[in-house]
Image (cartoon, rainbow, N blue to C red; front, side):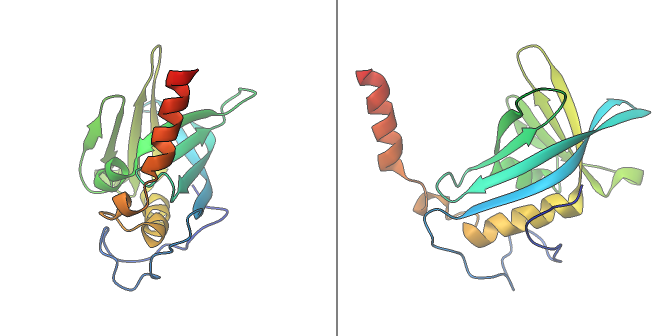
Length: 165
């Protein structure tokens, strides 16, 4: 899994921000990385899954995962950035998404389990690439400061439009 755009791998734990670029305060800051994941079919079989990770400062709690598997349009999952961060070092998850680090011979991997209405997918990502992407998002919105970037007024406006429509 290699990013096409984004940061290089950096040393150091998350969410520690020592040595990182100061947080960007631009309202529309976006992080995008094109990656190659693996869908785990069985212990001996996996298939490559081209994917894109997206993060926006306007939606600071969410990382979007667009996966492209033999479909005309990508399948998009909205993932909690906090769950992805936690899953780098320990099993974590909520509802349809769980994330956990690899062990033993797969210690360089992070696994993402996605459950939908009719299907379940287990994806393997390179831990160093996911770590680098999450460090990049931390430069845009440091963990713990998401509420400073969350646009409550826009959210309330959208909810009002749905009620009126």
